[in-house]
Length: 178
Image (cartoon, rainbow, N blue to C red; front, side):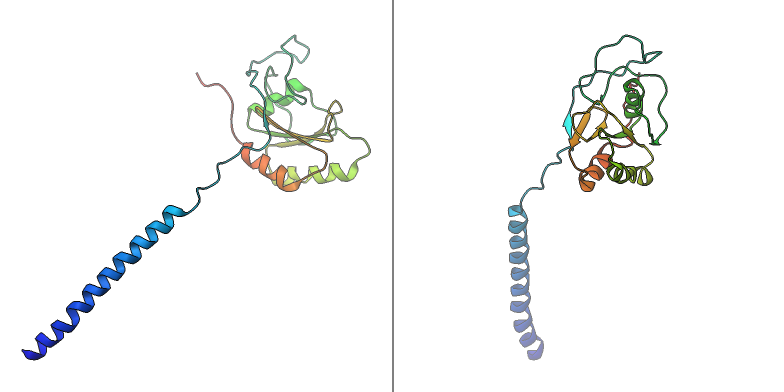
């Protein structure tokens, strides 16, 4: 009996001390978590371009409102899409806009005799299924990335920037649901 009382008098204060130490540790962790910096907000890649809607037209020569970016990012378009992948010919604005509406990304170049640049850009069509690489002679910059309502232009290919743009917008369908 004396032995049990002796053990109890030693164990009880030790257990209380451990419980108090644990509570202090938990409180300390809570204050560390409270002081952690807030995560950075997601900033969408590229520049936003006002949405011109998604009306269908029968022919590329049909009169319609002018596009508000070069290359276009939304607006009147044909009822079918261009083939995904590599195009050696420019794609009509009215056709490429439908690809964007369907969740595609256009990578277009406005340079001549730039085979190395074109080869670098064409590699993206091997990685992704809803990307088109095509020439666009009317551009003011060598490279333009477009998605529905977004554009990013650059003078030199930036692989990380291009990848980020494609991942952010590829696959997002923009058809109006009724």
